[in-house]
Length: 183
Image (cartoon, rainbow, N blue to C red; front, side):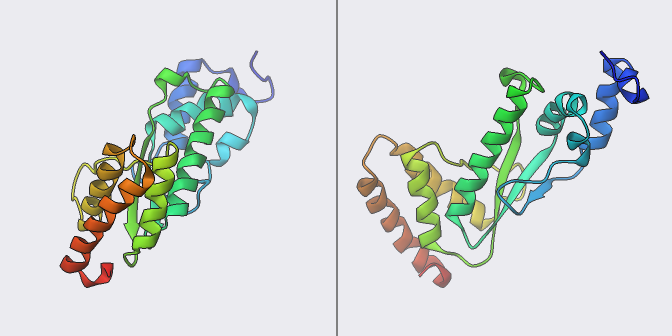
């Protein structure tokens, strides 16, 4: 039943969905600097608006986590937070699980840090961790490195971490020869 005190909520659902889209979806990539990204204020205004607009916000927005210095803990925490946000949207009925398709990626900034990268890969290997989506344009050197080590770790998912680490350390030697910053 629509809330009589709010004319917006008395509009037809199709019209409200178009309004929610214009309010919560942006034409640009949403950069995430903390593991729990802020949600639009509209989603905190009332239960009905949250239920109707949350799925639109998650499914039609593009999120990119800005990872500083290859911080593996940030990557793992942000991935867990995004999964929690998805679960919340599903649990309140904002979207059905099969309809929720978030566009979520990572961008690495700052100095190369092999120890941080290995922390992320280990966490990803031991449990379902963040996986980096293939960037659609302008593949950077950092993207290539991230995708390569992720593919190594993913391809060895059934092997013990010590075996994965041995292969990764061989890759680290190659990286250090190519770029001094990886030493």
